[in-house]
Amino acid sequence: MAVQIKQINSRKAMNNLRSYIKKPANIITVLFFVILLFTVCLPLFSLVRDSFIVHPGEVRDVGAKVNSFTLYHWKTLLAEKLYDYSRITFWKPLFNSILMALLSCIISVGFGGVVAWLITRSDIPGKKFLSTIFVFPYIMPSWSIAMFWENFFKNSRIVACYNQVGMLESITGICVPEWMLYGFFPCAMCLGIHYAPFAYLLIGGILRNMDANLEEAATVLKASRFKILRKVTLPIVMPALISTVLLVFSSSLSSFTVPSFLNKNGSFATVSTTMRSLFNSSSMQGQGFVIAIILLVFSVVILTINNSLTGKRKSFTTVSGKSGQVSLVKLGKARMPIIILVMIIAVFFAIVPLLSFALESFLEVPGDYSTFTTYYWTTKDTLEDRVFGSSQGILVNPTIWKAMGGSIILSLAVAFISGTSGIMIGYASARKRGSRLARWVSNMAFFPYLIPAMSFGAVYLSVSYTKTFSFLRSSIWLLIIVGGIKFLPFASKSGANSMMQLSPEIEEAAMIIDVPWWKRMLKILFPIQKASFISGYLLPFISCMRELSLFVLIAAPGSIITRVLQDFDTNGLTQVSNGINFLIIVIVLLVQFVTNKLTGASIDKGIGG
Image (cartoon, rainbow, N blue to C red; front, side, top):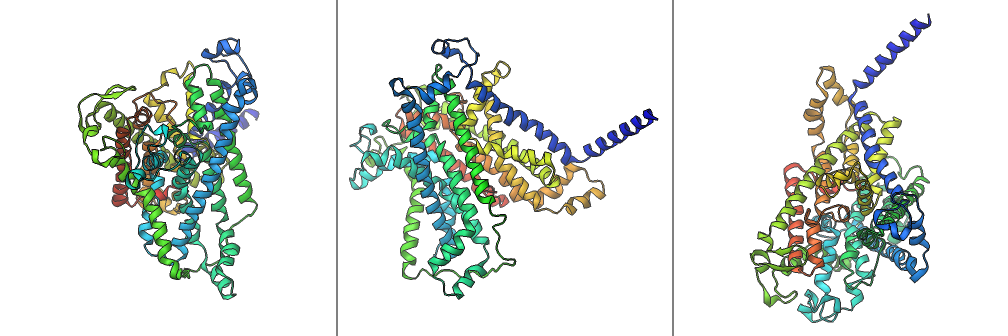
C-alpha cells in the first residue's frame, strides 16, 4: 500500500513538472532567476569580499598576506587622521557630491517641471517644437553638456584653460570667473540640465493624464491659479516629483563624467572621481571597493525612502471618470516673454552644443574663428599625443574608427541582450502575475538601475580579479555582460508594461489551434506592441553608445569611443575630442530619428516606464 501511494505521488509530481514545463512563462521565469542570481546578486558578494581582503599591491601597507581578511580599507578611508587623509580622500568629496546632487535636483525638477506644466496646462505657443528639442539634453551624454560648458565659458584669464578662448570671450570679450567654469556650480548646472528632460517626461506624463475636472471644480469655486497649483496640481504630481528628486539625486551623487570634465583646476573632488583615482593605484584598490559599496548603500536607502513616501498613500488616483476638456491657463501678456525665455534656454543646451562641438573641431586655436581649418579632421600627419603615441586626423585615424566600431558592436550586442531579455521577463511577469518567483525576477531585473554606474563597473572589476573569471578582464565580453545587465531595467520595464496591456485571450486564441510559442511571439504579440518593444532595444543602444562611467574601470584604452574621447580631452587635443563628441551625438540622434520614422518607437517611451 505504501509503495502504491509512493508511486502515485511520484506520477503526480512528474505530471505537475510536465505541466509546469509546458508553459513558456514558467521556463523563462526559472531561467532568468538563475541568470540574474549569477549576474546581479553573486557579483555583489564579490564586491563586499574585495573590500575586506588584502590585494597584491597592498601587502606592504597592510602587513598581511594576499586575500587575508582585513578592516584596513574601511578604517583608513573612514577614520585615518594622519595627514588628514580620511577627510581629504572621502568626507570632503562626499560632502561635495551631496551638495552637487542637491542643486542638480533643484535645477532639473524646477526647470523640467515648469516646462511640463507650460506644455500641458498653458496656452504657450510652439509646444511641439519645444517638446521635441527639450529631450535632446537627456539623449546627449551628460559629459557632452560639460564639454559644451567648457567650450562656451573658458577664457584666457583662467590658468587651467592654458590661454584657450571660449565662445563667450571670443564673441563678447567677457571672461567669467573660474567658479563658473570649473567646480561645484557648473557640475550641478550641467547635471541639472541633463536630467531636466527626465523630470519633464515623468511630471508631464502625469499632468497630461490628470483629470481636468478637479481643476475645473476649483476654478468654479473661485480659487486662484496659485491656490489650484498648490492644493490640487502639486499633490497629484507628488509621486512623480518625489521619484524624480530621489532618482536625480542618486544619479548625480555618483556621476563621474561631469566632475571629471569640469575639474581641470583640481578644485572639486567628488566620491566618484576619488574612486577612479583609488582604483588606478594598485595599493588603494580596496578603498575604491569601499566607496563603491557606500554609493550602493546610498542608492538602496534612496529607493527605500521613495517607496516609503509614495507608499503612505495607497492610491494617488483621483475621482473616477476623467475629463478630456483641459482648460488651459491663459498667460496673457507674459505669453511671448515666457516662450522666448524657455526657447532660448532649450536651444542653448540642445542645439548650440552641437554647433559648438562642430566649430571647435575646425579651429586651429580654440575660440579663434579666424583659424578655421580641416587639419584635425583630415591630416595624415602625426599629432602630438601622449596617450596613443601617434595620432592622425579624425577621419583617417585608425584608433578612433576602431574604437567607434567597438562601441557600435558593443551597443548592438547590449541592445540585443537587454531588449530580448526585457521582452522575455516582461512576458513572464505578465503571465505569472502574482507569482512569488516572477516578482523576484522582476525586482532582480530592476536592481541594476539602483546601482551607480561606476559602482556596477567596480562589481565586475572585482569579479575579473578572481582566478575563475580572469580571462574576462579588459575584454569586450566583459563589457557586453556589464552593459547587458546594467541596461536591462529599461528594457524589462518597457517589456512588462507592453505585455500588461495585452489581453491573454489574444494569445489563447492562437494556442487553441496549436500555434508554437515562438510563432505567437513573432507573429502576434510583437507586431501589436512593436513600437514599445523596439523602444526596449533603442534605449539600451543609445545609453551604451554614450556611456563612460560604467566602462571607465573595465574597458581597455582605445577599446570604445568614449574612453578614446576622454583620453584626447585629458591630454589637450580638444579639437579631436570635440569632433569625436560631435560624431557620437550625431550617430545617436540619427539612430533615434530613423527608428522613430520607420517604427514609431521613441526614446521617451522607454524612460520612466
